[in-house]
Image (cartoon, rainbow over all chains, first blue to last red; front, side, top):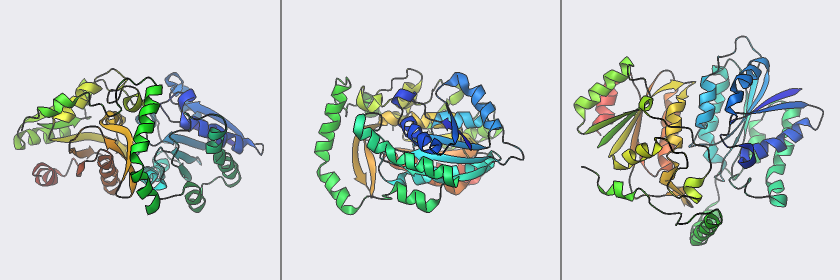
Amino acid sequence: MNLLMISCTPRMKEKSNTDKILDEFKKGYESNGNTTETFYLYKRNEWEIIRKKFYENDNILFALPLYVECIPGIMAEFLESLKPKEKSNTKIGFLLQGGFGEASQLRCCESYLETLPSLLGCEYNGTLLKGDMFAVSLMDGKVRKQMVEPFYHMGKYYAQNNYFNKEVVNDFAKPEYFPKKTIFLYNVLSPLQKLFFQVFAKKLGCKGSINDKPYQNYLNDIPS
Amino acid sequence: MNLIISALKKDDLYGKKIIENMQKNINDVEIIYAEDMNIKGCIGCNCCWLVTPGVCTIKDDYEKLLIKILQSKQVIFITDLKLGFVSYKLKNMIDRLLPLATMNLHFKNGQMRHYLRYKKHYKMGLIYKGNGNQEFLEKWFERVMINFDGTSLGTYNIENEEEILDELIND
């Protein structure tokens, strides 16, 4: 079987968490002799080809990062440029990843993705979702491998089942919420976390504080 | 100041009517049309959190938009729906609000959130034109506002003019 994979992140491949996950998913998908073809929406000059591929293929996976509770603007723009398919047997699955750790943060977007394929004249093939992926492209070596490896198995799974079963996904994506203990501990250790981000920002070339308020002056003169 | 941000075309009849009505019923209204602005999509570079905190790398009209939002008492977005979701032009604007948050995290109401950069209670509402699932849009927009530690003024179908005038504008 062949799977058309469309990466819907605006980040270029080298810096993209979605694409590192997708690469691993692809390896798993291809492990039993299946084939894939991948296109990237951040390459805007390829949109014409990607549209053509969308119409030609009947087994499609959209991979995306969560952007403010739903799909990123670039994906919305691409989708708006598609004409719904007529009389197709096309199946669309989704791979949705986010920075926050809890699966519950991805549910609002998931509920939108459930409705999307039918609006494009296609069938819904489920959504694989997973949080806590903020650092994938910042890590390398073993740590990154550890973070993305589960997606190899899900690629294999998707090739075998051609559907993301909800129970399987829920198990893969847990925790749905963090336990109260974790939340308590996290809030207690909050100063350490802030320090960590500040040091990290400095390494990236940040000269000020990560809490800087560059537009504070505009706030102060609110007319009633 | 009350800010209206419309992603509808200026000559859209529904848009014109509702905006006229709002101008009549709300004092101190300012209107921004997406049509007049160049707002590109967020590229997820994280610079506004980690490299130039609070400032976006993409130099287009986002700064004007951000400042207007900081100055306003409430913001009302107007958009058409595409495939049951807000148009990409509107989503781009919302994605570009990320400099309002910081990198720092905490838990609020059982979920992880970013600390906000400015001390301000944002109040925003959404008016949409076209077919969509009201329940989903309501939920989505509520969650958008949770991310900015603000309040959703609700989501309204542009055809329900009375509801908009009674509930959204009288708030």
